[in-house]
Amino acid sequence: MSIFALEPLNRGQLQSYLELANQFLDDRGHVITPKHFQKALTHRSVGLLFFEPSTRTRVSFELAAKRLGATTIRLEAQGSSITKGESVLDTCLNLQAMGMDAFVVRDRQTQTPQVLMAHLDVPIINAGNGTGEHPSQGLLDALTVCRHFSSGGPLQCDLSGRTIAIMGDIRHSRVARSDVHVFEKLGARVLLAGPSALLPNEDGWGDAQHVHTRQEALAEADVVIVLRIQKERLSDVEVDPDTYIEHWQLHQEHLSLMLPHAMVMHPGPVIRGVELDDAVTDGPRSLIMQQVRCGVAVRQALLHACLSD
Ligand code: CP
Image 1 (tube, rainbow, N blue to C red):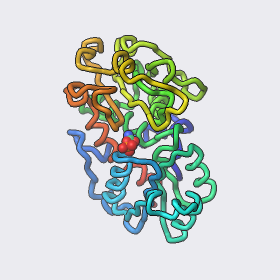
Image 2: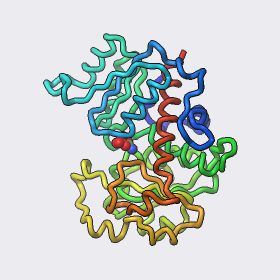
Image 3: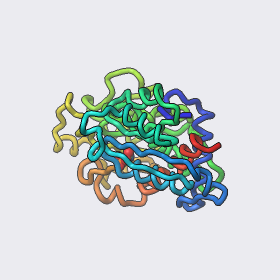
Image 4: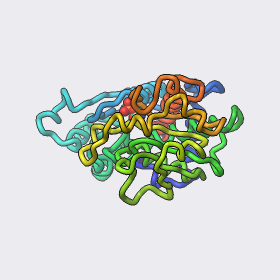
């Protein structure tokens, strides 16, 4: 089994990943690995192939694999024979021949995970494919929200009646795309907020509604997910940083425009002083570090689902 995207998954499948991931968190939201999972992936080897930069995703997949007893091999373009012209597919075919049991892959080409899935016999987990999807991030964002609104009780995955606003550079964000799919399937309403040039201009974004001011996004949301500007994918759009900050940065004063219980999330990396100020990033309404903890739990769940007997 591979994990390519959240779009094709139904609510029951999403819920079972979230429930499994929730078993890897204690009551305080800290990562645990119950004893019966600790050797679940012994003798399995996971290839972590990151051909785009990553901190959270790469490290948390590596930790997750090791917490389940697997061996990990890391490969980046620099230092591998990809720099001599070998394709990602040929690289993976060679690693599969060496005995790798699964690959976690991040690449700037949207089609990479599907090409690998078509030619390899082992599970592929998409860790971000260009502007496509980032399924483990979508799941960890959903787990963060579901746990927050479960108030310490059993995990509540029904988000009916909740509104999630995603604010910033939506058009170039694979995180936003995965978030739209998971949150809508769990019953939430999704608002996409940002300057027109950074809102989607194509299909594939579910029923998400566009809003064109920060105030509109903040007024109705139970959770505001703030995104950075994806500079590395901005070839089609010019964004003036000062204008962006004036109209779209979330700083402490804006918290009073939000519902009293509403929380702030960000998938990272946070570019402090651009999309968020320090007081919001580090303040009591931020769930950002909880997202990071949920990331390890979700990745343990995905590796276990893909690789256990
Ligand atoms: N959120 C996320 O994907 O972060 P990294 O790029 O650091 O993995």
